[in-house]
Length: 369
Image 1 (tube, helix red, strand yellow):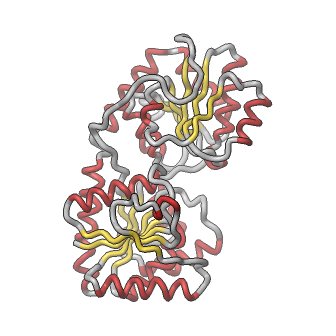
Image 2: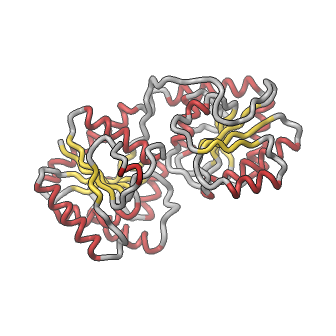
Image 3: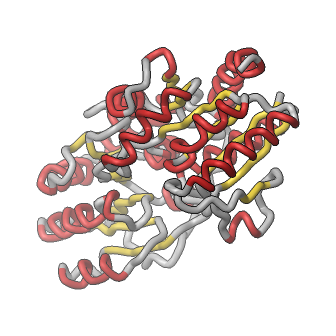
């Protein structure tokens, strides 16, 4: 079968959505699918030629420009003439333009939603409700996201499908010293987070909670694995006098090699669709403390394989971390429970099979569009 995948851009193969798209493409190609990939706007990564299939750079600018819509329609007609019947769209702008233009060109448009709509504006919501009428199917990576788009984008439930992220089941787990973090004594516990340095991730909350723990006399350090602008966080760390306790390790190609050294893993975002980081934590057998938002409660059962805390509640965050710091047997028990929960449930094979089943169910309909 043939499938077109269209994204606004593709800058970083290690980011959440991009990493899952890469796994999807690899899996489909391995099964003999003809995958055509396109981006509205190119990037250094795309220009490097490292993506596994050829990439069409559509050169789309503002979505308010009629020329952008015409470009997508013409691209759709070209795809249709080459035998493509499905167009799977990722990210914001492609989800607005592609459904009506691809449908008009004779393809079945599929959209993906992988977050809780932090990017929604009034204008986007109006456009999505209008162009969403052309959507054949919407794929969400959690039940929370599915419920959100049904309400906000007014998509009917029968068009919405939940397919969880997929991860390798037998990936080699590495151990040993990591990054530039200072060596710590055996009685110092490592609290870790894998998240880019963005406001929505609320890493400043974790830094402040760590300051509270240090003030209580706990011997802990924080390791932050993720790219972004470090300066605001370095300023906060200096203000709190935590330079010896917090290490910003930057973006890493293999975050699991760093997660192996965590004693407690944290995700304190204000919004999440379905967190790759939490799954990675559990695959490594780490207890998790995360915010009660988006799809997080679908993965973490409070008190069983981790703790759920309210967004922005520093006292609650510090308290749950202190509980795990003080009870090593609880850390071990929660880590084992988390590892058992994700084993097989979130596999690449399951993710790929569910995508293929949906694509095949839509292909006959697309050929008659």
